[in-house]
Amino acid sequence: MINFRELTDEYKTPLYIYDLDYMSSRYTELKDAFKARKSIMAYAIKANSNLSVVKHFADMGSGADCVSIGEVRRAFLAGIPAYKIIFSGVGKSDAELREAIERDILYINVESEAELGRIELIAKELETTCRISIRVNPNIDPKTHPYISTGLHDNKFGVDLTTAKRMYIKANNSDNLDPVGIHFHIGSQLTELKPIYESAEIVADLVRSLQNIKIELKFFDVGGGLGVKYDDEVTIPPYEYAQAILSTLKGLDLTVICEPGRFLTANAGYFVTKVLYEKQNGDKKFVVVDGAMNDLLRPALYSAYHKIEAVTDSKNDERVVDIVGPVCESGDFFAKDYMLPELAHNDLLVIHSAGAYGFGMGSNYNTRGRSAEVAVKDSKARLIRRREEFEDLVALEKEFLQS
Ligand SMILES: *Cc1c(COP(=O)(O)O)cnc(C)c1O
Image (tube, rainbow, N blue to C red; front, side, top):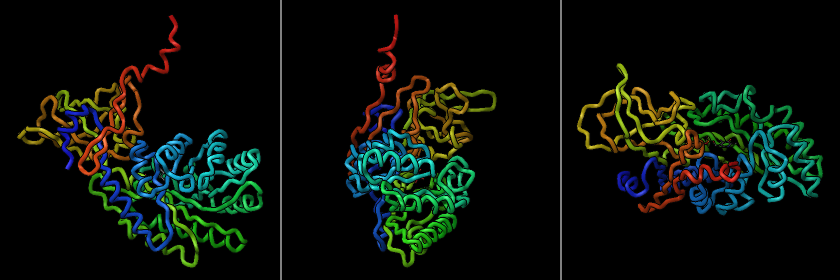
């Protein structure tokens, strides 16, 4: 049990708290589900990129899925070996590609024909061969929020099957490209197995048709996307997920790569904020807290639901409130029409499921420093990122200030 009062007394609010033991148990659960095959869990760093979190996964044997060269550098800093690092994303710059090739990572997930051309050119300049995998867009509706759906031709991600095949042939004929993998990732917060299974089937069929023309791949990269419980969602059990994927690979000798993000970290994280005031505007009751959308953007961005728990001595009946932050936007809320008892100044609200796409989506909007982050492991807490101070926020501008 995490003692929120004790931790916020020590580290102040707003505060992110991560339960690393919970992350370990999720990692093990997923890894074990694939034990019938060789597999690599490549943690999707963007879900929670704190170096100590990434290192925690590195220590468990995890690889990393990165979507910028910054994330690739984080993976290296945290001790993930090059041969377990993957670089994905729809718009990688020349400089990013060059560095990834020089660092000799496992492979680059390629998202377009144009990008394949750039990679070939850069690898040639560097007089080397670059391992690649191609992101296939299977045109399957993942049935998730449109902002986190990526597996339809309407979305910017990946290439269609015909284009993918053409790209594999080109890569196979190139001295500077080595096609080793195939990739799909149809969306995030997936709670239905069928779209995943159908995508895996389509992509596995492509692997077979490539085999027929003597293009042998080694890695079957199924992306991330496993959904978690924020509220009353029914999620996909890891074992069923793995079985569905493995069932499409009969007769193929492939290492499975998974890129879980949210699944590993979302429910390991808490965002804790302090109650400043209650106020009434007409019929509407507001609880104003010291955390804001710049700390945790998901409610503002996707109208995402997060369970909120009050740490209070209040014994009053619950009533309907909106929980809002200090930022000057009406989108700055954590919940609307939520049931909470009457709260006093300095009571705490614990916002659950904040371990994925929480801190990382934060900003300094309204010149607010980002929260501190604390990790709890074996019941011991330690600071893993200090709170940003005003001086941090102005440091990059001050030197250019003219009198
Ligand atoms: C975001 C992303 C992931 C992780 O998604 P989750 O839903 O957090 O598991 C994995 N792979 C790629 C390519 C991504 O863009």
